[in-house]
Amino acid sequence: MPFILYIPVRPVHSEGFKGTKKDGYKAACEALFSLIGHGKTDDISPVSINILGEFNLAGEAWMIQEYYQRRGVQVVSVMTGDGRIEKISRSHGASINVVQCSG
Image (cartoon, rainbow, N blue to C red; front, top):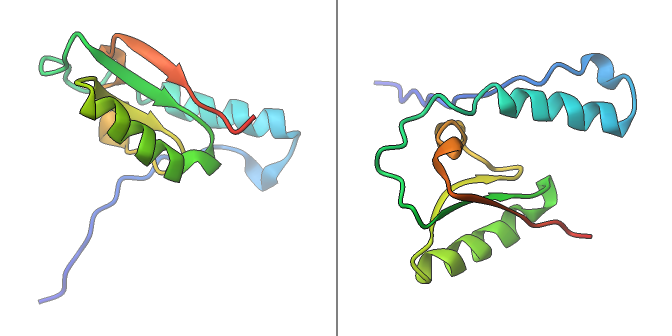
C-alpha cells in the first residue's frame, strides 16, 4: 500500500518574481497574515512568544526555541523558512513577538 504524505503549503503570489525584493517580502507577509487567527488558542500559556525571523535563521531558530522552552516560555510559532502552517495559525494567541535577524 503506498504511503501518502500530506504537507500543507501556502502559495505566495509573486508571478515571475517581478518587482523588487521588498515586493517579494510584502507578498510573503500577506500570505502569512492570511493564516493568522484561524487556530485554537485555549491551550496557550500566558508566558508565550512567537519567534519571527528570516529564512536563513531556521537552524538558529531551533536553538533559540529550545532556549526559551527550557526557561518555561511556550513558543507558539516560529516564522522562518521552516515555519508550520498549523502553528502560525495559532500565533495570535501568543503574549509577545520576538524578532531575530541575521543583521
